[in-house]
Amino acid sequence: MDRLFTFEGLGGLLAQGFVQNALLACAVLGLIAGALAPLIVARGMAFAVHGTAELAFTGGAAALLIGIGVQSGAVVGAVVAALVFGWLGLRQRERDAVIGVVLAFGLGLGVLLLSLYSGRASNKFGLLTGSIVSVDSTNLVVLAVVAVLVVAVLGVLYRPLLFASTDPDVALARGVPVRALSLVFAVLIGLATALAVPIVGAILVLSVMIAPGAAAARVTANPLLATALAVLFAELALVGGTVLSLAPGLPVSGYVASIAFLLYIGCRGVGRLRRP
Image (cartoon, rainbow, N blue to C red):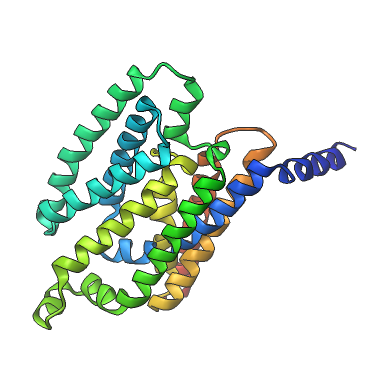
């Protein structure tokens, strides 16, 4: 009876409009994150994603304080961060220092803005850990538009981006516009990260933007197969984590991060077994 009740309860939750919106948002976000993740890993930009997430958090906190859409604020903050990172620290030896400086400033400012916000505590908490109730039809439209934009840009620039990611010095010597591609890719990361923050939170956005690509890289060196696997892993983590979080009513980020971590550990094991 308890098991039947649990399935019936889950069915009832899945019938709710806000849950369906959240699942659709997770599916679209999984496509974007999975498509970007292998390139992020190849370019060694995990720390940049973390920094961008913190600035998206700052933008969301500012939007919360002045009473506009949190997602809009997060997008502005993330894109500004991406452009700053792109312009100030394209070289590997400069990048970490630039990101660390900007990240610390943005995080401190975001905490200050949240402390000035006198509204519901759940809104503050949601920026850090994510909240499926924050997804509405407007968010879905924005997410769909960004998804089309990201996929279209990747479709046009994938080959030079991959070349610049795997061997930037040779790509530069061959006439590939490495600097311009870095800026474009940074903006794509900013958009995807900003859309991930309201769902999974600023703290654990790496579980969506990095873990699927890192897991895929452990089992294949084929770029296209790695991208397909990364999309699959991102979908499993996001959609599966959302479904698992429904019954206990806990933040989705912990479930998403746990699934992504288990997938990564599993792929590491598969990769070791396949070694000669």
